[in-house]
Length: 279
View 1 (cartoon, rainbow, N blue to C red):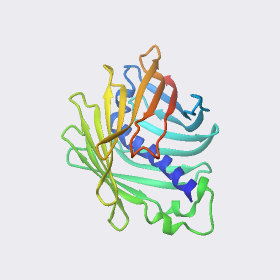
View 2: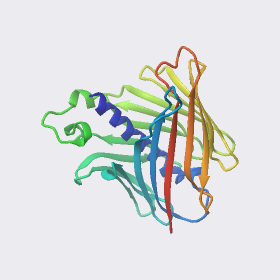
View 3: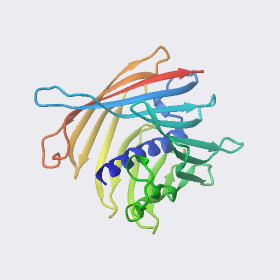
């Protein structure tokens, strides 16, 4: 069950990244005016051993595909270079997103998401249909006994609060019975860069806060993680860019601050490599 939980967290990260990218078309991650056709992204991490070494391990691999207008069409998740799942997005005749469907590698449906909008045309609610998901266990293999007790605790709705520019201020995740699962809140600078993220648990209490700094191109430069107002971790980023000024390699070096809240954290290096195809 632990491995299933970790796997679902990875899927949630992909879905959350999609929720953000569908609004901003990858935001400051893409700075060139040349339209991007696809991004193949591989993320590897290595914990720093006492001798300063660490063996990199691939933690995620995705291929994101876009149309000429910049709309995301699908995100394919790979494991060991083989397709594991595929998240496909649908739009109406006005290019407004209406739903997303997460497929298993055999083409069967794993999860579907429906989008609702406020009077300004911004997404303000996402509805997650997990009915098919209950029939799959770890590694998305079909099982005879439903993981119902486990899945009934997952969120099925996300309520979104936007500002007048469409920037997300709050994301509230609710269980099927309406109880709070968790919540995020966001703050921005005058350029639209997210400067603070707060995570609230199912009791509504603040658990973690993350603060961000950016370079002149809007690329993340520093990330600081806080617990009960204590800084517990810092991450510094460096980039390699292509001829179109988009980054194709990002190195994130994380250091743990020595205090009472860092028992579950450790120094590590994360390297993200991207192969970008252009129209």
